[in-house]
Length: 162
Image (tube, rainbow, N blue to C red; front, top):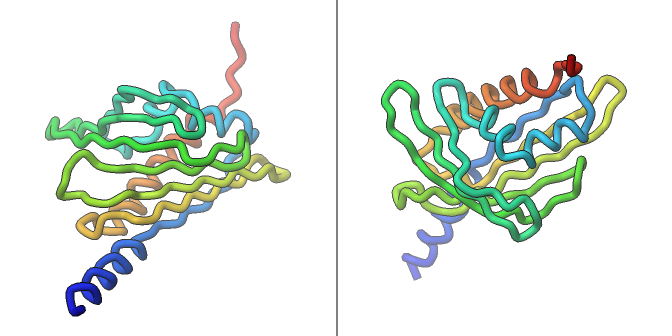
């Protein structure tokens, strides 16, 4: 019985590891959503500064899966992860799971992203839960802030073809 209580407490502690971010980005929901659904675009902005991303596989549909690797450019170490596209409402909502290949980073993270057209662009809200307890939440916030900065720099310019 004591093990059951401890297991429930650990599970609760694991599930409360969550970050929430919010931004207004000066672009359309369609263009912003495309940055999530296009594997080349996604690889360009999703890793924080100092990391490279290789998308090995991305089947962007409900029930589709993806696999990718983040590589630290300085140390050349990397970590791989993948998951499933659980829910997709084009230009409105996206829910995906993330599972690290490394057993020292256990569990399934869930990332939900809301897109809402506003007068000056698109409101985006990102919520990531189930973050493994060995990852400091402040590092997750920092990483997501950097990623959203890169995302903004990708989607805000409106460059016309020559």
